[in-house]
Image 1 (cartoon, helix red, strand yellow):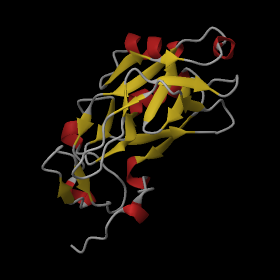
Image 2 (cartoon, helix red, strand yellow; image 1 turned 135 degrees about the vertical axis):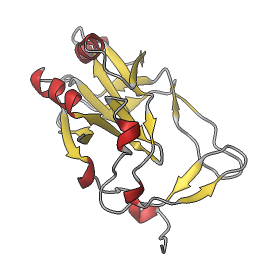
Image 3 (cartoon, one colour; image 1 turned 90 degrees about the vertical axis):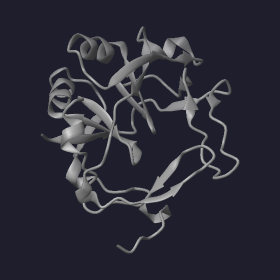
Image 4 (cartoon, helix red, strand yellow; image 1 turned 90 degrees about the horizontal axis):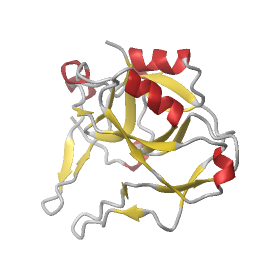
Length: 196
């Protein structure tokens, strides 16, 4: 099976911003990790021209058009959560925005050579090394879902060929697709080097 990372196609569309009402997870006192956004996301847009898919890494927001199609098609691995929209209602132009919450997590393929670097004894968060080649999911795990994140590097959202086709055929605006074997670690410069 083929899988793709889904990314923002253009920054020319309205951008998403947090509002002061946004809640975040507390940082761990031991490892310092945390700070992830807690649903419901509290957001606003900076202008009109809101696309079907808005990227607010690591989160994705979608319009009700995307939600309706994905629910109709029974897309597996994602749930749609309400957002708290705090911006100018006229910017929405009648659209409703949803948090595209990816609930499916799969392991990376062994060929990625990802190693566990740290495991916090207090909060349980784990830190992993970068990968070799692309960021490829375990085929056995990934085939159960249409949308998923890779457990070791959860900031990336992957879709299968079926979802890619739905996005293209329905002209959902603002998505580009990177084949999994081409996905590079954008944060590699921050990760410790590992000698195998």
